[in-house]
Image (tube, rainbow, N blue to C red; front, side):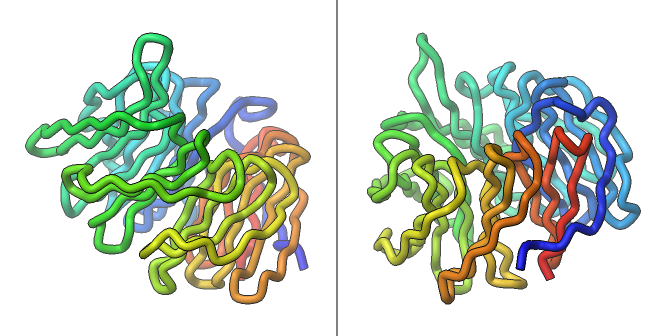
Length: 298
């Protein structure tokens, strides 16, 4: 059965707009959404089920990630990242990065911020690590355009999707050392999440497939078809399902990797980004709905 629709949370000026990656912060119980078209971050109070703030000043914001009350946003139009307090909504810092930062990771306990930068005609793609307290800055060159990234449970390794050549790049933390490349058998590695308990990576690829890989060795375990070119991908440890957002034609493909069973839930055109609200809801940011389409993942 498709995921059940619970309701819609309206966002001002959301109809027909453009959004990117969003994140749920468990400490504040808020969802932070990159509103790319308006250079701002939208904030949803999950428990109240309503929009509570529009935070300006994030040029070309491409994504938001959360960890222990801290939010990290990538400003693709400003060659910077922004660190926010999830409770006060204050911007604590906005350090510079390489050009067009895209995928991101924040590790609050280690004070690490990581940005995968696309680059431009003057600067190649890079992976950059910034120490939020000691201002350490480490940068390595990348073999292709970066997409999304995650870490393992211990935050000792970073996994980053590269579009072409399609791969998962693995780097040691906290120094971005011991880099290895794991080939992905499908073209255009894009969305990415991890099942820490089973040691699995889930790589959603532009050729409309979802690839399951070992997070220990890079071994390819399964490849499943999905309903179109994907974007944001989340694994829900509470249900064991992998949810892949597909902007065209507008759906979420949900796959149970334990048996390969798949369902498709119709969302709306350009609804290519989501946020997993643990343990049982999936927020689909939908311009056609004027905000957030809330789905049950029970």
